[in-house]
Length: 486
Image (cartoon, rainbow, N blue to C red; front, side, top):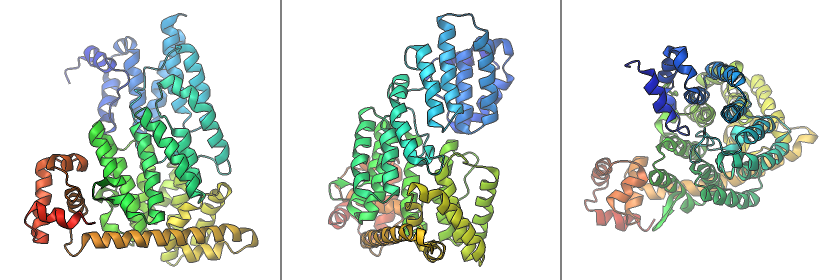
């Protein structure tokens, strides 16, 4: 505000691996636009940070303009160590420009490493590799029929990336393989691969990738009807609480949104509309902290929530508009879910022909890669429509597979729903009150419960007052005795 650009850019450069968070992007854009050219010339590092902020916020025109500015200055630098350094870092940016073409990104990573001869300064090893997305497959599945090729390339290319970034994104290649197995209905193999991915991510403290692995475990637990894995029992914490505990321990609160996405998917799949976190049921705010690339995951949960709420025409307008505008055009998993949701909405509004045409688009993209689970997760909405559309001889195998997996999903969901109903009993607790009561049942202290819920102790006490009012149980010991048995 004081227009002291020299000091402002120096502050930004004091830690090159930390970047402006997304809701402050406009502030940084304005600052750089107002900054005199001669000062910018002296602060190459700050311009790199500006480019990354623009990319993370999804302002690709600003990203491209800043990258062109940097390329021009790198080209003008005389040969030497400093020039090699900045040209190497420029290749790191150029790799981002190729997102999510794994092979093209890796070419730039190799050139960056050859020039830098050391890890890049642009990424901290603990930054969010998946940019808040709980799915690596969502981020890198870009071409129908080429999923196996993409997995092979990921395994081939990640070792170079690890050298360049000090194991930023560790476990990503196994996560992509895990999610492909899950979507093909190979659940036992998916569980094994998930453990490999989780172990590698944990070894290098890659919290974002650990979340991707835990989200896969949530999906597998639902299929198995394993409510204990999801919600815990006695001293054992469930996956949902583990996620929030991991955030609190690492103070990586940006991932609260990712935890909500995972929880929202679970409750949306179970058909429990009111338990979906409210912001996932609402329109996404322009001030959202979500990185641009994680917003597609928001719409996967939000679209299902709209269908549960009967907001069919609203969904048709929103998703048709996004597809027409090319939103998430490089994220094919979004494309599949969007067409499934549109098919369900068209069918519900009496537009059967449109529904059939739209569903066939989703099937034509997903089936070559054996991506059955998007149809399985939404079988309750599109089951009869699938039967009509997969009536040909060549489609019978896919239909049989989807129907068998849908029966497994239904059985697992019913088992989990019974557990939820039993736990909530007759008190009408909100999801957060219910979570607090379960944690009391594990014998945890107020501070431990507050940390796991990512709230203050005062907020926790407000929840407890509501619990005691609704239940009539006035002592903490009484709540412990009730909930420890569950």
